[in-house]
Each structure stands twice: as C-alpha cells, then as structure tokens.
Image (cartoon, rainbow, N blue to C red):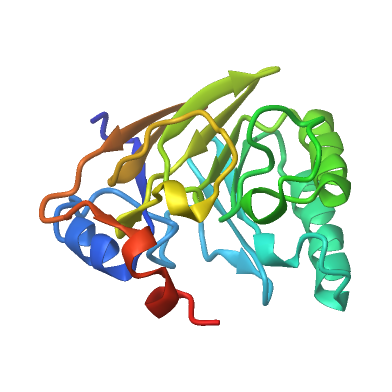
Length: 215
C-alpha cells in the first residue's frame, strides 16, 4: 500500500472488528474504529460523525433515524448539509447501516430492508448535488459492489450470520456470504474489496432469529 494511503475496514460485529484491528498495520487509519487522524479530530454529533482522510470527507449517518420523524432526524439532516457544504473540495463518502435502495433509487418501499422512499429521495437529491463518490452500507448480510450514475455503492457482508429463506427477504442482488469490506483511500481514489475473515462460521440467522431478535 502506498505510504500516504489509508485503509478503512467495515464489518458487522465487534468480534470481526477485534480480529481485524490486530491485523491492520499501525500506519493505517480506520475512522470506523478509532478517533485519531492525521487530519485532526473528528467532528461528530449524537447521531453521526465526519472525518477527513486523504482527499475524502467520510461521513457517518444514523440510518435508524431516517423516516422516523424524530427531532434528531431533522438535526441530522441540517448537520449533513453543513458538513457537505464545508467539504472544501474533498470527495465525499457516506457510511450508514441500511442501504439507500436495493435495485433503484426510484423503487417502492421495501420495508425493513432499505431506507424509506421519502428520506431516500431527500438523500439522493443531496447525493447528486454534492457528487457523493461512495455510499457504504451493511444490514442485508450480503456483499455487493456496483456503480449507479457515478456513485459507487458497496454493501458490506455480515461477520455473524447469513440470511436464509425463512426471513422472507425480497429478491435482491449481491452475494450471500460472511466477511468484511476493505476500503483503500489514496488521495482522491478509493477502492473497495470484500475479504474473508479467519475464524468466521457460516451460521444461518433463520435458526436463531427468535433468540437474536426476541419479540
């Protein structure tokens, strides 16, 4: 890796994070795990955070607020506008748990599986206005990497469970696998690749869903 580059790892659970922290060279920076940066201290709100690394502004959003109608949702929207307007020419990358959409930004409500149409529309408008380079998400327990109208969308797989047929998920692209995503930032360039994590076992959430998500 070039000496001025940076690596960001994303995955689902703290176990995966602990495994990978031990494998990441000390010279790399992982904004999703640490609060130190050569660009200075991260700026954060109770719901999100931003950190400048290389030629990028990395912005973390609380996807659970989107469409909630809570006061914090409006505060996050105001904050997002502010930090993007203040990016000073840096490329912008968003990190959030739930993907904006499954197949198309214009699709109907997919329920549990992606951001609701109304907040999605607002975000897509901001995404296009600021030419957001990368939207990184998880939630679906699938790996997927695709380009849509100039923006790279990456779904990080889970490090815990696979999603089986009894979960009644709608048809969606991507690969049903475990692992993590490595994002390599080098100046204004970004590369994303899905990697395997040693020690993970391919359990199905279908078998333990009542224990993991008790009703």
